Length: 220
Ligand SMILES: O=c1cc[nH]c(=O)[nH]1
Image (tube, rainbow, N blue to C red):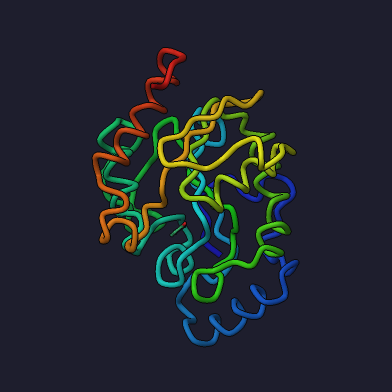
């Protein structure tokens, strides 16, 4: 298995089968798509980066194929071009493991590490996988976390052992937690970008706020 990052962060089992439905989806995909990565997708980027970006889950033809979050499908286009614009990546496009693409002071992970059928992890799967996000946050100690969408936002709040009711998700909302500041954005999905729910300027302004917070301790 080709993994280009520090992984499994001490506890993550690359053969994790804790979610039966996801494990069996992987199993079928190993037959259907033998050339795909077809395993839990590790976080990408320096574990000591100050900014952690959290997405939903690997896409079947994207991260599950390439083994890198937001890589190989539409979802990564806006994410990585924006990170590049703000100096958080060495290029605007992430193509595949081994392509030389690097993040700068940023790391990208997902609330759920395995590709879910129909792109929809169940609440139980999100809960089961939360131990890994929790461990990542503990080890990496980011100063800022950018949650892409409601599921990622709730996963981060849960990983910190906090009450969901005290931290409502909203695009461009910021929440000062004891360990880091949480920045919310709508997910960079094809649906959101094509319907105009999330535009490039909207996403850029959230990334800019996170960068300003990291630079000057303020963020909008
Ligand atoms: O949330 C997402 C969407 C696509 N690819 C990912 O890795 N995460």
